[in-house]
Image 1 (cartoon, rainbow, N blue to C red):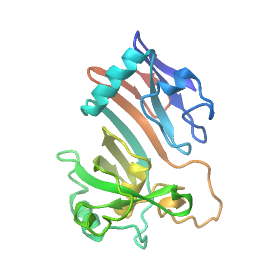
Image 2 (cartoon, rainbow, N blue to C red; image 1 turned 180 degrees about the horizontal axis):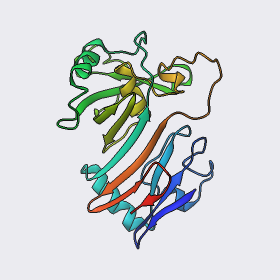
Image 3 (cartoon, rainbow, N blue to C red; image 1 turned 180 degrees about the vertical axis):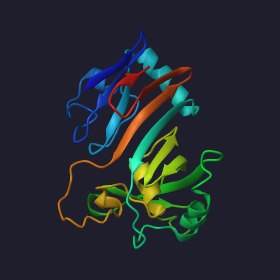
Image 4 (cartoon, rainbow, N blue to C red; image 1 turned 60 degrees about the vertical axis):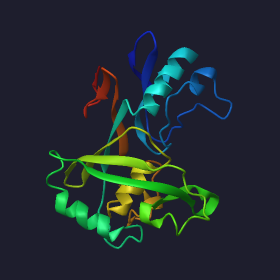
Length: 219
């Protein structure tokens, strides 16, 4: 991993695709002070606290929605996907050209799905009664789509759940490139160990850690 930023309380690393957030199953103490995780198949910025006090302070900020993470996702539209929520997709298509003025929000609960319960499926507010006997998250999670241009999405989240952005974009009919778990139509039949999703910016209070496309990093 590449170090992007460091101060007295925390440091930030860039995680490449096809690499675990934590080093191994018997991870070191430093690994346990990682503020959040990224899926193995994704890349981007990870933030680590330098000590327990800093970690607890960061967790409090995160609980208060004061840590904002920005992701970029390259997507390929799949109008035949069974994961689409038709009403939500229609609203997004009407709004997709005005996102810079007002972000489009996708807010759902989640339930585990599939072999080994490795995937998730979105559960909307009006579906909670239907799934009341299922293992559904106790709270909902929000993704804000702040930009869309020719298949490339920019999405912001504060609190994140496993596969949140992947599942939310799939409900709109825009699975992430190579993400066959969430509806990407892989016509070549070759599975990739990585998908086109990257955490490109993290804002913690007044501190912003970001990166730009040519892999130069900005504080």
